[in-house]
Image (cartoon, rainbow over all chains, first blue to last red; front, side, top):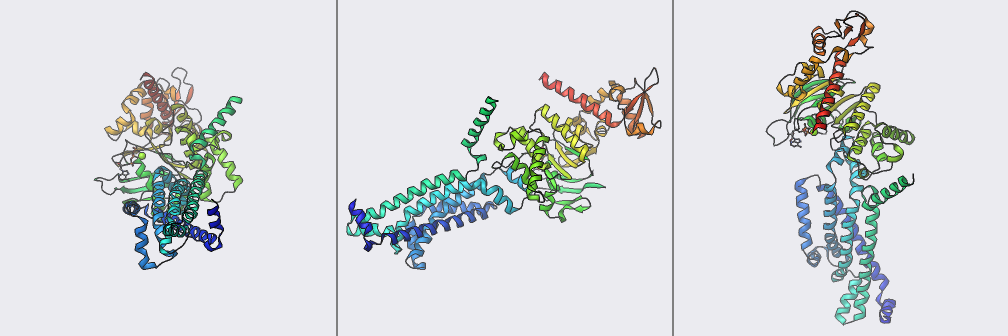
Length: 229
Length: 334
Ligand SMILES: Nc1ncnc2c1ncn2[C@@H]1O[C@H](COP(=O)(O)OP(=O)(O)OP(=O)(O)O)[C@@H](O)[C@H]1O
Ligand SMILES: [Mg+2]
């Protein structure tokens, strides 16, 4: 334990710098995956053919290991952060795209019909009706992909992007257990934090009207009031 | 001037062998209620949805106030037409109050205070006390209550035209009658032009000045309830309106059952045909149809004293009443 703290405190190891590198790669990848995943899902959801292609392609993407992407993009993007980021974005898109698409398709058609019937524009339907209804499902997708990205970003060290992965790979090469732990523990903690925080966010984003427990507890209150009266 | 005119309007869905709506032409007068009746799949919803362009016709025209709807911006068109959809379709993430006000919000031009007041008025109107229901969510309401919110929502902007697709379908007989009476009251006050789809011929008789009978996408007959009863265009209409049994009833219902006192005719004095109080409603109806008189005066057969007047509307009311009771009895028997 002391060895670990010493390792982290040692300016030579630049723990702060590697942490920032790691977090930056993760954050940028997650942001890009969200934007691309959501925009793609919204764009394809109006066309059955495009939806079919997008959904199946997403499934296919999930089957290919990240390391394959990483190796495949290096010839085009060179080494450093860019190839790692591209690979992580590709890894992060499918859960978000699939969840967004499922969310949009899961909305009762009558709801959309009523919205159109009262004269809402495409944009109003998207922002006032679809977005609030699918937000929790999208958040669940973001949670999956963020955890995956954080856990996988250690591979970024392969292309020389740095981050915690650098400690792990160095540690393996030099049989330095402390270095491996200094890389692995922050990754595990980060993944846990994201899991818990996104789980909370997911709940917070669920509108009360479609939240099961909330509806029931309100009913209980109502019955209580009736009982008093 | 007709508010809504259909000119040979046709809709054929891609990949179907025959049109869902087939060259339908008729007019709905301004401020009147026209009922669309017909069996399931006869094209009622399709016809209705072409009015606010949720469905685009294959051919033909729909003209509202002299303007072809196809030349109007569909968004603007929909904002000035109230639409109650068959499947209700409330927004599950919004409260009841928000569901009602959203229509007016997107149409624009309402201050917050006016909106709040309007929402309460409307909830009151459809029989959902605002204090209790305002803050609830759709899933905390029964199907019938949701349907009433759907009606309130469509009324929010006080549109001159209402399209109503079986708005009372999920209501029990008592609530349905209350809502029907509310609608009649609204109609007396504000005179909207209403196209109303119904499966229920009693409802059609009660609410409609005109009834359009559709079968397999074709307009079979357009007429008043009495027209449909007295001169059904074919066996389909005869069966639909249950004309045989009603005519038989008219044969033994006396005119005094359908008397009314203050009609327009009564103001005009004696220039209407006179009947004695032992005549039947059938005789009266045939006389009215034959002479085109606005009303008949009824005199007591012994004292010759004037008792009141008979009009097609009063006969219509009596039929609806009698017919309604008859069905209720059959239902109880089952
Ligand atoms: N989107 C569509 N694509 C193809 N056919 C359709 C479509 N919508 C409706 N139809 C067909 O058009 C016909 C008329 O349908 P419509 O919904 O207008 O009937 P309806 O009179 O409203 O029936 P109901 O009383 O059951 O509501 C039906 O045969 C139906 O199957
Ligand atoms: Mg229908």
